[in-house]
Amino acid sequence: MTVSTANARHILVRLDNSVQLPAALLDVLRDEIVTCGWLRASGVLTDVSLRSFDPDTGMPGAERRLTGPVHAVVIDGSVGLAGGDVSCGLRVVLSRETDNGIETIAGEIESARAVAVEVLVTAFDDVAATRQRHTSGIALLDATTTSPRVSAVPAPEPAPAPAPAPVAAPEPAPAPAPAPVAAPEPAPAPAPAPTWAETIRVSEEASAPPPPPAPAPAPAASNVPKPSPTFMPGALGNVMPRPVKVTKAAEEEQPYPEPGDIVDHFAFGRCEVIKSDGDRLHLRLGKDGRVKEIALEMLKITLMPPEEGQTGRLFKLARKL
View 1 (cartoon, one colour):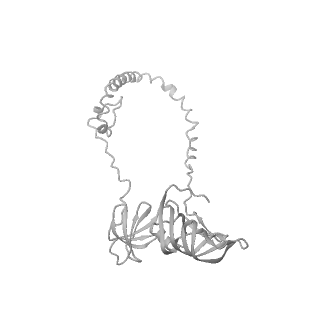
View 2 (tube, one colour):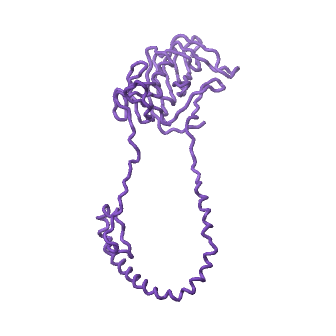
C-alpha cells in the first residue's frame, strides 16, 4: 500500500503530571480532529506495561510490567480509525540503569503514566485510513477509503460512422439533367457580376474605418450582430436587436450553520452551534457541555430534514474525502 499526501499539519504536545497513556494522548487527537497521521515522542515514563515480540510464536508475547521511572528513548506509531474512534500505536524503546549496567527494552506500550513526555503529531488531513490488526499481531494502517481514479472513455467517437450516408450514388446521376438547362442560365449570369463588384466596394469601405472605433464600443457592440457585405441594415427596415441571454447563477448559495442550529459532527456527535465566524464554528458538545472550535474547510456540510420537536436547523458535518 502506498499513499501520497500533500496536506499535513504538525501538533506539539507535552504530557506530564502522571497522566495515563494512551488515554491522555487520544483525548488530544480527538480535540485536534486527527483521524490519520503519525506520532513521535520521547521522555520519562513510569509504571509501564508493554508487550515485546515473541520470535517463537511470531506474535506479541505476554504483558510485562516495569515499576519505577524509565527513559523512553523513542516512541512512535501510526494514528488512524479503529472501531469508529481514533486510535494510535505506541512502539517504544526504553532504557534504565541496573546493577548489571544499562538495560534496553523494546515493545508496544499497553499502558503507562507520563512523567515528562514531548510528542510531535503529524496529521494527514487529506487521507482517511483505518488501523487494522495484521497477521503478525500488530496494527497497521489501511488507506482503502481513498477514492480510485476514474478514467474517461470517449464513447462518442463511433458517432462518425454515419459518414458513409452522404455517399449517395444517385446524386451524380442528375448531373446530365442541368446540361440542357445550361442554355437559359446565361441570362441571370450578368446579375451577380454587379453585385460582386458592389460587395467588394462596400467591404473595402467598411473594412478601413472599423479598426479604430472597434475597441471603444466593444461592450455595447457585443450584443449587436455585425453587418454583412451583402446585407445592409436598412434593407429590412427597423431590425429588432437580439435578446440578451440572462445567465443563471452557477449554483445556489450553500447553507451554513448559524447560532442556535444543531450539527451532527462525525467525531463529536450532536452539538449546538453557539457562535459562527464564517469559516469556523464554536460548538457546545452534547455529551459533556465542552465548547470546541472547528474549521469548516475540510468538512462536507449537508442540510438534513428537520426532526419532530426541533426548533433550529439540523446539519450533518462529514469529512471531505
